[in-house]
Amino acid sequence: MQVWRLVAHHEESRKALSKMIDIGRIAIGWSNIGDIKDLAPRNSSEIAAKLKSIQPDVENANMAGPSLWNLFSEVEIGDQVIVTANKKRKCVFTITGPYIFDPNNSILGYSHQRQAALTNIDPEKLWQASEGNVAEGESVRWTLVKCQGTKKSSDIVYFEGKRYSVTSTAIERDRSARDKCINHFGCSCQVCGINFEDVYGNIGRNYIHVHHRVDLAHSNGEYIINPEADLVPLCPNCHAMIHTDKPAMSVEKLKSIYAANYA
Image (cartoon, rainbow, N blue to C red; front, top):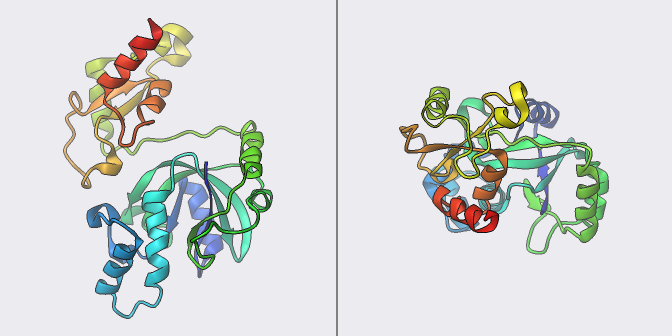
């Protein structure tokens, strides 16, 4: 678990923060560079160079490169993000999903985003537990910067974590694809076999996650889904376990791990 600090918006930070909370995402700017997945950068310098090439008069390319690289490559699911607005630490989000570029749902023009859930962690306490400083090699001037981080910061997250739950929502390109997947496979997990209706009765009816065999974060934008070949029903536990590899391991690999340990 890593702690980050994010400036919500340099001009309308309060409004941007409110939007982040409403849609469950954090976001940063420089949207004119486009989807970073298409750029496929190897480091922050390549992002900065690309921005400079399309906008020669930009003055903060050296801030954009590291901030976008952090959001795209360094931030991980489960990390904590302290969000500041009007130069005050306002709240903490937990990262729940991969990098996405979504100009159709921009946050005051900010389209580089990560799914995130608002927590009740005290941002000031978490900042102080992270020694009130940024990590070595990072700059406090960057929009998204890694914090120093200590065992104390982990302890605070663990303690406060008992008081809230985080729900990770998959990026669904087409709701009908999910329905067709379930119509084909049913609502039983394709790894462990659990069917929530069998275990919990009516409250478990039709409850199941649907996993993309190819991570959306590693796909080249939108693509045509074959619900029977590209999607598979998984219970939340197996869905979490399959994503312990990056990119996600195959369903077949997880099945073999489950079989070896459950037998």
